[in-house]
Image (cartoon, rainbow, N blue to C red; front, side, top):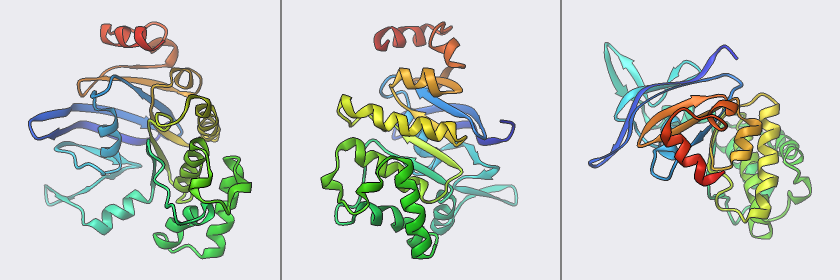
Amino acid sequence: MTTAMVHAAGVRKSFGHLEVLNGIDLDVASGEVVVVLGPSGSGKSTFLRCINHLETIDGGSIHVDGELIGFRADGGRVRHLRKREITRQRREIGMVFQQFNLFPHLTVLQNIVEAPTGVRGEPAGKAREHARELLRRVGLEEKASAYPRQLSGGQQQRVAIARALAMRPKLMLFDEPTSALDPELVGEVLTTMKSLADDGLTMVVVTHEIGFAREVADRVVFMDAGLIVESGPPSKVLENPANPRTKAFLSKVL
């Protein structure tokens, strides 16, 4: 893990007068799994959305695999990219949200092949073959012809993960992927995510699942008030945090 897949430097983001990100510096190595913890309102999800340029940063910079996200340098100035250029960048970054956002009128298989064929221009046969491989990977091969309404929440989220993987991303972002699930369905989604980590996929995961962080993360980052206040191996941050704010947070969730 020597190449920086994500390089965030001095990232700032405000909504009106509320500064949500106050200067975030973070590097994520290729193949690394980083779990981001923190209280509600700390800026975790906003930062994740900035990596994918779903939110436009107000200051600093974000590079993914060496490419500046959302902007380009032009004669010493930084200019916004055109929409189609941003779309091209997003092809390389998969994102899984709290809500599953599946198309209700499409089958599971159709949901997965929609983006590769429509955005990447992948041949339909190749896209369907890859989609079936991904369904096997997430344990839902038999659900290819089902519609989202016929699936449990955990199954829908696993389909959403397969849909993101169908674009063959170099980076996966997870924004509290289990928060909308009933407790008994959380495990099946976390198991799928663990298998992706075992395969060496670079992942940044915003979650409150401390067990997942302890078992799967290479590094845990704790955010509070728009800042990274502590970062390190799970054994250090979770078992022996140095920052009082981290200690207070973990005392309530462990």
